[in-house]
Amino acid sequence: MNINNFITFDIEEWFHANYEEENAKETTAERGLEVSQYDATSTNLESNVDRLIDLCAENGVKSTCFILGDVAKNKPYVVKKLFEAGHEIASHGMSHKLIYPMTPEEFSTDLRTSSAILEQITGQKVVGFRAPSWSVKRETLPWFYEILAQEGFLYSSSIYPAKNTIFGIPNFPVTPHYPTSNFVLEIPQSVMNLFGNKVGYAGGGYLRFFPIWLIKQQIRKNNKEGKPIFIYLHPREIDIYQPRLKLGVMDGYFHYQGIGGCEEKLSSLLEEFKQSFIRMDEYALKLQVILGTLPKRT
Ligand SMILES: [Zn+2]
Image (cartoon, rainbow, N blue to C red; front, side, top):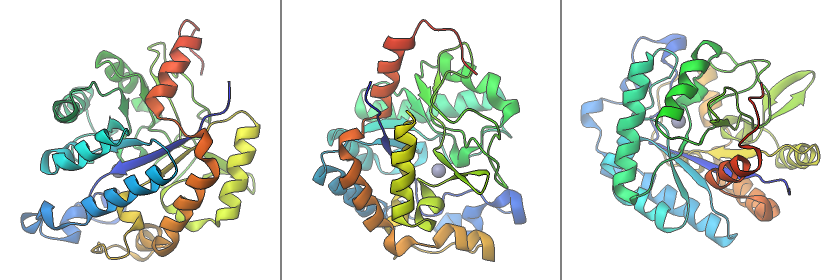
């Protein structure tokens, strides 16, 4: 089987981010603006998504889009545009709540509500999920996959298989596999080895931080070793005009560095690896056909 890679977008507004655990009692949204003043129609989300659709179209690439239920509710036309352009519509939960503080029942409701909104717009079953801020921890694993399986999901792309200050499961396998016997595939975030530590390089703040030559070198290296990789970005990451959250020095740096050059990096990656990109649902289905009867691998 040829190595497949994936382009993924987490479709959320400029203020959807989770920093509250670290340094404040308020939510990020409350620190950024008065929520009551939020007017969904006045953000740049739609034009940023249009740009992402164009960039993919220029290279004949179909992406996987993990979309928040709140965004779909406020801007169903954004979901429709992505769907009509052939991109996969997957779930990113309802309103960017972290997974590990939830009870299994709360997660189940969140998943069901957000998927129903997306399915109503497209008329198609949602089969993929990405946890907000990679917020699946080791103790969350058994019920997390159980609920995804109950709701008919084929795969999740929710785990950072390394250590980070706010997320990650160190020692988690770095390649797509079935973590439990439910046959819900996990496609973990792509990592590289940097001075003996595993670290992300192909999405978000990591993609904006590392030079493009290093990112391309690591993709080629991972693919040579038989490992698929995925790129992930948010619409706001190609938008230098977005409103700014009030964050501390470190959070602010990670959240905003490299925005100016991000679109160019994405464009260059799309062009170089366009032959390898497929949608995650297609990959999960393909694997299920090939490996569907194999026992669980951890
Ligand atoms: Zn997100």
